[in-house]
Image 1 (cartoon, one colour):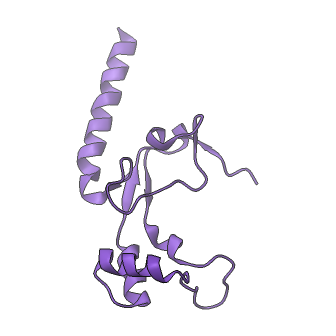
Image 2 (image 1 turned 45 degrees about the vertical axis):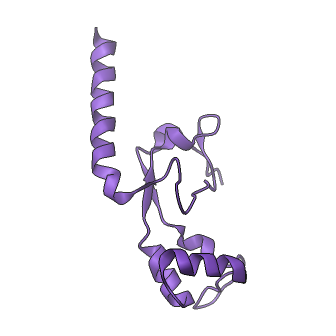
Length: 117
């Protein structure tokens, strides 16, 4: 299966960090949270929670977006892009989506005007 996508396949990507909490290869009704006490302590502090269930719920609400060309590698979107929990230079919080989309639309309109001239 070819799951490589070029940067023009999507206008915007949206994700949350919840998938990174789960151990690989776990199956069943409930996924198992990674067993890394130091990481879990950092995440509990960052999200202000005290249990794995609260942590999962907090990460499920932590949506972020990026425009594909920003994270592209040789014209393609990485299969597993890196998303920093704090101060990410690429992935933005959803409260900035509207202004960023407006900016992107203005840029595309300007590009179209230039190409017609």
